[in-house]
Image (tube, rainbow, N blue to C red):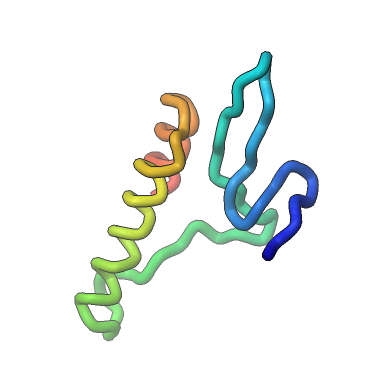
Amino acid sequence: MEKETENKILDVTIRKEQNTFTFSVYRKPTTTDSIIPLDSCHPQEHKHAAIHYLINRMNTYGLNAADKEKSRSKH
């Protein structure tokens, strides 16, 4: 079980604001925000899986509109 460190668990930042929680995707300072290039020799399934993961993460974490747009514009 991962313990909370600086309000972060795994790749989620959870903030408590006025008795509610807000969620955002935490990115390490070393994150390059790169995914598998379309012209790489990786199988198509791997490329699709990377995109599906990012979309699923964006839609299931309960992000507010600003954080969703931030995640969408990163990729």
